[in-house]
Image 1: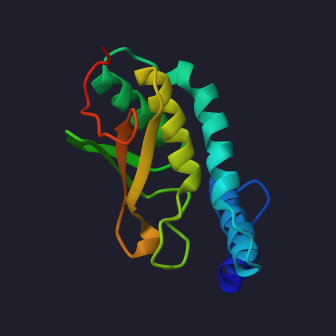
Image 2: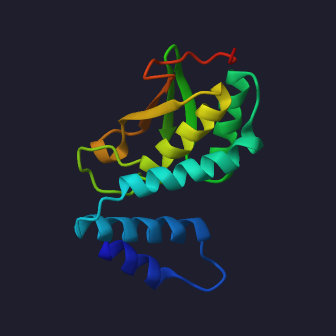
Length: 165
């Protein structure tokens, strides 16, 4: 990570830098440093994600679940958060490629996307009108080439990608 920072800082020229690349590097550096100090970030990141998901919901809302998933995917791509695909509809499974939250993190064998989980949990809770879960079962930090989230609704059951009743 120190080498990444040195390489980025050494190549930086005013006006020519990608602000997203800098943000990702800064986020990763802070996150890894806190993890190395033993700080448990997941609860904080999850709550922050939920708050953002609540605010984001009106921008991606659609009563049709397929269109809702497409709106989320479009938002993720437009904001360089990664690329989302619906892998399964029963249960609803989302795959995230080039995940901004974890693609650059070291492999730890554990999921690392508490922030994304919080956002998705809030989005699908609002969409279905009842508590939802976004359980990460694969992650770049677990050695996979993508992140995988299973969306569960109403007490742990999985929900298919259909329009809410």
